[in-house]
Length: 292
Image (cartoon, rainbow, N blue to C red; front, side, top):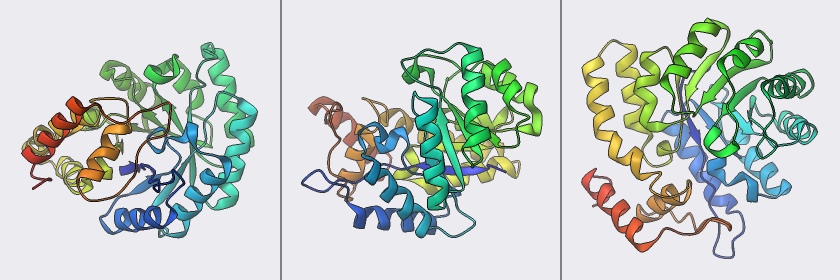
């Protein structure tokens, strides 16, 4: 079962722009020690479109090698090519990943039938359980609840990361699929609302900098302390919003830099935060008590 906090890992780069494998190893170990339930290397937050095949391989290897069995490693494997996605999933399986996260194909804008056939091929041939990833704001296409229901019975389709921001759609997926599929929030700000309609957790950007209160919010909800969970939700909301003040992952990497973890910059075509956004981010970090 997919349940709890899964970190969409930001990628550290050295001063020359190369992958900082030493720091990445430290970040993996830190997340494990802080109780995160899973790690998602090669996610969008990892700047996966700009990572070379060798960098993706290294990132997955480091996550696998430094995570105990109880921490689920979900490798980002989605592309807008069915065959390339299958190749990525097979490579992740060979590297020891537990699951593969696969977004809807971007730019192609497939029909719902095309989406269904795409994900069926990945599930049939990839060799790993899949976490579907619905993020229409980036891909240009929505995975409709009816399509998720058609896929939910496949033995290799374990869950869906839902980042449509549509709670009605999220609720409909849960009603249609029941316990045949686990739904995780793809938006930090909606973690508690998604839990309230039957979601199981979150694939989190914010967890890169402050996983503990997210874990506590989920735990509070699960033990019936709704007031406590709501209090944490309200405190985290400005931080959740700040992580998307500009295009992810530029804000979270800048936040990590401000907090003393030298993540480097982002790769083109992304750009560093504007001075105005940087000032706003610094204020939110100070107001939250993270930045002294």
